[in-house]
Length: 455
Ligand SMILES: *[C@@H]1O[C@H](CO)[C@@H](O)[C@H](O)[C@H]1NC(C)=O
Ligand SMILES: *[C@@H]1O[C@H](CO)[C@@H](O)[C@H](O)[C@H]1NC(C)=O
Ligand SMILES: *[C@@H]1O[C@H](CO)[C@@H](O)[C@H](O)[C@H]1NC(C)=O
Ligand SMILES: *[C@@H]1O[C@H](CO)[C@@H](O)[C@H](O)[C@H]1NC(C)=O
Image 1 (cartoon, helix red, strand yellow):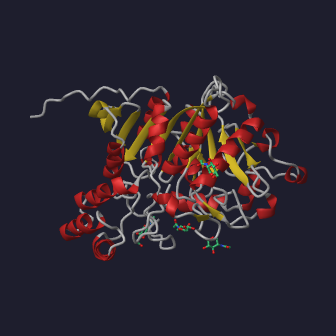
Image 2: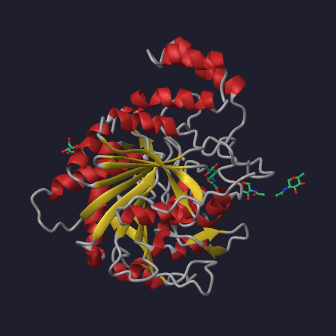
Image 3: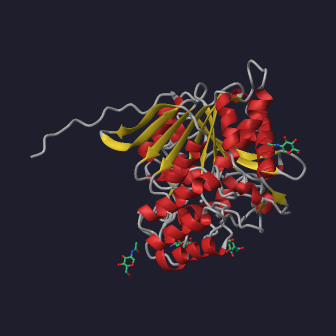
């Protein structure tokens, strides 16, 4: 997920086995000590090869990861790095536990095997990044930004591959959502530059999968106003004011007033990550904007799980931080100070570069997300001015409309009908099918439903 950096009135807008004394004192910077026997509450019959711990990238920083090996044929399946956004939201807490990983936290604190996990297709590597996020605990807060994040993630990967050498040269993909629309292309750019002229690169980057990504605000903004208006969230007058004032200067009084009117008097209490999701029932303790992250209170259950001492011990969290007051997204200024201006940087030029480098690039968009809405992404992609290979057409999932696809030269765009910001959480089966298609580099090809004669 989740929290985006752009301003507007929401800050949001933006998503066991106890370690023995010996284990706790030895370094967990290697694969042998990183093995997780079982997590608290893990179903007895769920055998998952999993590893977690830290990779120290310099004196100040060590990054926390969780590797879940593919459920079968792990030695031949690709490696996927998953990154969540924010900046400041945990890939363990969101991506792994709420979206694509093998387990989901139940309200009673036990784990359930997720029926649809991406571990059928790939080895999943979740990284709590930037430093200071999730279990990548930091004590001194210094300003971070897109540059340090990309460099740290790159340093992490190189070191991590030393601990897990079997993944060297393996087909490698990076996926994620929201502000990872910055992290992923920026990391990919460093890798591509590093790999130039190398026939058989250690980090064998093949492609990127970006969900409801933050790419470029100026070209996307009109798409945001359109979405609000088309979905009835704002009045005609406010829409007109946004078009009139915000298109010229978003810091102008006219633009600010329009947003204020929208938030204070028009939009109402809505889940900005999925406008049609019902709120998480009877829960008044969660922040209003997060309320209804999904209807199962998955967020609250996940946080409660990751805060537990025995869970942290099983995950090999640094003993000096246990029990750690885990939060899904870092508190700005408390454990993360992230350059706000970096959020304004356009990632489109980097995408262009990566398209030229012939990486496989798929962008997907859950159509009910308000945070990074579909028309915003469409406008971002239009700004790339790519040649259309196949124009907007429907794709089907189990004989039902799954969404739409547009194929560009060097880029695939997939709309996932009815999904919110975290597409795999809201529509796991559709997302899984899309992931399979992405890996096999073929657009979803299920046949359209049979026409029935209606009377
Ligand atoms: C980050 O900044 C350093 C120093 O200016 C530069 O060498 C490096 O290429 C930058 N990295 C990225 C990913 O922009
Ligand atoms: C929420 O509160 C209503 C009214 O008090 C109650 O009927 C309902 O069962 C509650 N739902 C849950 C999930 O606790
Ligand atoms: C409500 O949310 C809080 C904090 O997010 C969580 O601790 C609590 O268990 C939730 N309550 C219910 C009934 O889901
Ligand atoms: C844990 O973090 C949350 C969110 O930052 C904060 O509200 C809460 O007071 C913290 N709890 C403790 C025990 O520090």
